[in-house]
Amino acid sequence: MLTKTHKKWGGRCMEIYYASYNHKHKGDFNISFPAKFNGRDVHLLMLFKTKTIIKENDEERTIDKGTFALYTPNANHSIQGCGDEYIDDWIVFNPDSNDLDLIESLSIPLNKAVKLNFMDLISDLIHKLAFEFHDAYNPYRNDVMQLFMQLIFFRVSQSLYLQIPLCNKNRINGEKYNILINIRNEIYCSPGVVYSIDELAKKAFMSRSYFQHTYKKLFGVTVTQEIMKSRLNHSKYYLSCTDMAIKKIAEVCGFNSDIYYVRSFKKIFGITPTEYRDSLQQKVDSRVND
View 1 (spheres, rainbow, N blue to C red):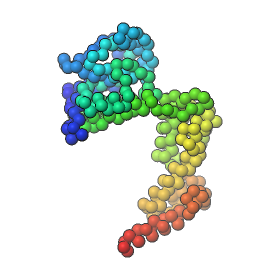
View 2 (view 1 turned 135 degrees about the vertical axis):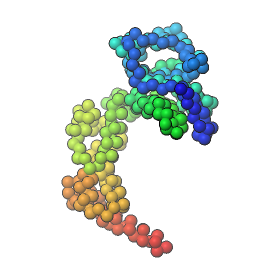
View 3 (view 1 turned 90 degrees about the vertical axis):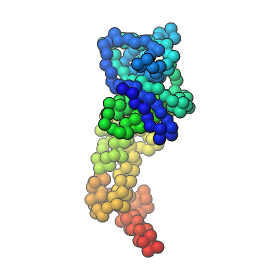
View 4 (view 1 turned 90 degrees about the horizontal axis):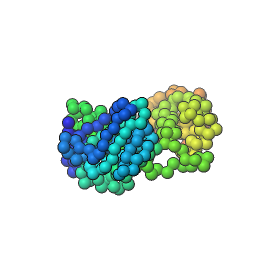
């Protein structure tokens, strides 16, 4: 199957020949490059999810899971599984000049396997792209796949070059960084949930003290401040878009009492929730009168 993106996306026309997620083989799996697809010269994007032996220009080495490679048609490489099972994600494609310019601008290395910080994030994007590839009934799938390819390139570059802040003289590895990002996202998506620091630290597989220190180092605020910020910002949405009672807003936003909610709101924003709601209504009335 060959798919081609539409011209309307900035004139780009990447050809995607195949995409596979979490592809499993026996441990003795091996393949050599340069690779072709139905006789065509192709680029091959690979994400290795098990330990693998690779040979690059006659130099052999063992790579760990979470290693990425982008091979060009002239690549002279071979891959050999070295465990009970070999697993990878891969995309066979043919980029156009705009795609190649993007890859170059992001400093993504070619024909050399490199370790990534955020394997799961990139694997998830490949998973989504592979789903689109096999969805023959989506009229926009080619355009969607083009966008996923661009996202993958950006995320690979981010994974290679993002400088994660130092914690205890050691850089936070990509896996822990992803966990903390997910916890932060959960805090903002579920403001009504009452979290304990111990519970969040357990999710991060960290001690309580190390979790709090690492979180503040990464995001510039304490976990407690982040939770409060999430709840108060979410409450502003209810104040501006609903006629929900203050007591109910306090409840759905995770406050154990409306008095504590009102006090916290005024401390941060300088006015009470009721005053905030009234000020919004005054602005609406002013526009109507104008």
